[in-house]
Length: 263
Image (cartoon, rainbow, N blue to C red):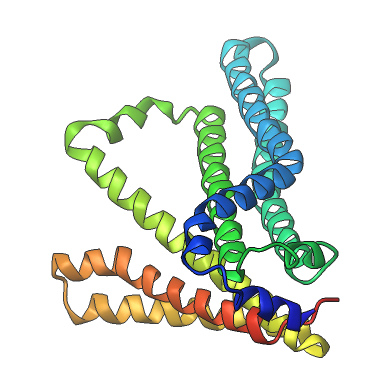
């Protein structure tokens, strides 16, 4: 199978293959989103519903405090705990589902089909990355929306969209996407590395994530201590995750290109 994959990478499509790469990328992305939405969308909808119900429980406490304040307090505590638990579970389930999709597509039952397609490994990796970015960003929005709804945080929400604050929100939003991209590719790298060290797979995956995050954090901290110039601050926010994303992507590509062993 590895030989066939190399032949696909070294085929003679030339510029025609490059021309069609975006079309193939979007087809892969569409398939990834459809494969994940069956599980993730119901979970995110449940989080939003629980957020609304939690808010109703808080309103009931205020309205009926003199009559049944004790019962309302219990309901408020139960709904708040349920909302927080579901928020945490939605993040964990999203990570498990998306990591499972990556392993299944590259190392599991779907790998033979994927590598029989006239699509390079880079396109497969890019589609996985963008799919995870979309779900990660959507999970973040759902989590914030549910939290603001449940605990009445919408009152000051418009403050962040005033003229002097909107650019700050956009800047940190883009920075969040870049750092999220770096974290996702680091998880990909951990799974690829664990694949070539099957005897200690889980230990290697955990170590790769810890070491990678530590290196990124130390580099960002070192640049911040070195100088406080605006250019360096922008580089920490945008440049550092882009550099590490390129490094993690390249290593993943090389492992999948030369060390792939489909189970």
